[in-house]
Length: 120
Image 1 (cartoon, rainbow, N blue to C red):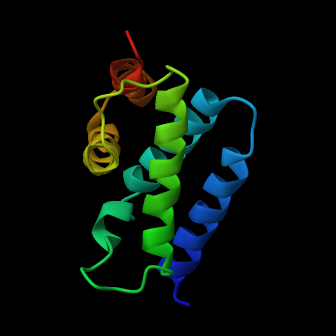
Image 2: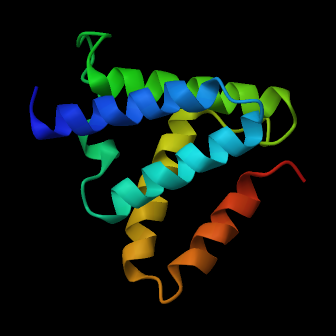
């Protein structure tokens, strides 16, 4: 497995670990923040998107599946807006990571995005 594959596998494992926690909202936002920071470094998980027809056991698929699972759990408990899909969220993560590279106050920029994902 190459470096990207190992990194993505680590992220998928982390998401699986978080999914077993007692606070779905916290688990989701912790993983969301971790993915944003991965993208901020320029190693965008969006750039290693699964190709159509690729193996469902590949790490990039596992990360997206884990993200969708965390999102669904957080939405069911009312911690995340119900109108956000995993595909939209992926774009938000990649875009937020890119924005943080240019933000004067990255923590503030990330807080704005996180607040936008919360159920009002």
